[in-house]
Length: 335
Image (cartoon, rainbow, N blue to C red):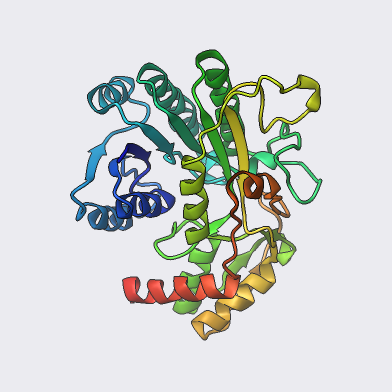
């Protein structure tokens, strides 16, 4: 079986993807810097589960450490790479922009260089629905223009797509970018709204509801994300000499390069989402309605036609089911 490097292995998505790969017999090299952007103990507890597998090796490394990343590739020469590590968070990018440059730009170049010099067969990397920014054409399709990001985080993810294309074009490195839409579920990120809502509701505190609740999100359950990632990993893009630049499809090109959305393609109004969470918790929320935050967007909605056509998969987990599973985990982990 293959040796696969998973960056961000102690993160939310990286943890689940690593589990799935290990369960199917792959050797997984897990990389993470365990940074304190959110609770490090949660990351360590995810990691502890992965370390029970004989085929898992963990490396405490920072993406921006060029020499260390180069040495990792030289030592292990992974067959494929799933690059999920990044400095996440739209709002935090307004406070600490340099963290995004170091991790999401410098770090991504280091990964690209490792893949280039060690003949990696496929690089799958995390992009984000945030790249759609000021786009108002709904649903968001990978064929749409994404040249107007509204946060530095989104700009770095758009830059990752451009950087990946350059390496696909120059070095024939197969790359696939995945635009994730609001991923949620057990072992999730504490900085996400659903996690903060749960903490506040159980503690009897009011929750902050931005844009006065007039928002919609394409919430996507973690199991659906993992299924999409693994299917895409196995679908290595190939060069397309018939591609014409005037086709105006930025999600593909003459190079071995692809971009896909992974979203539930059923956006949920924020107030409806909160209502489902209240049902799962068995408690009502006191709501503190606030204006829109800088860098945020009103709605996300994924067109996943390209993903379905490529790998025959679409997310299907209903929000009520996903939230019930999250609440069950939350109570078992924290209470």
